[in-house]
Length: 179
Image (cartoon, rainbow, N blue to C red):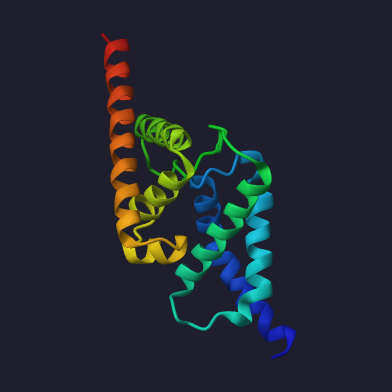
């Protein structure tokens, strides 16, 4: 295969998956100031390994696994907490036709969720993001993390409890302020 055939495949992959890879990296706690570098590293890895993709999983799952490994390596090199910086806006909010008040409410919710995710330990955060935000099942998560489905279920249960409690505290705090 010559490079003219490889470039369109990689370019198409890049154009299609860049926003998703950026969002995954942000959700896994890469600070805003490091997102560009980490996402670039993901795509460099994908470019080098594109011929290794055997189709045993979906392309999306394979890209997710590569993103997860690159982010894990980044966190190992970087050291421990805090994972996020609170400034990373994970999803695009303002679409055409969205009322400004609705966009502000959604932005506040995303900021709160990012803050709650930043307070989870890495194991719970990873499982929560994979299950609740990316829709992976316990078997897929277990395969990506190299743990059993029971371990995934346990981590997810604890993460959900922590997220729910933090969300309720934030809602109560806001309700008290608005009195």
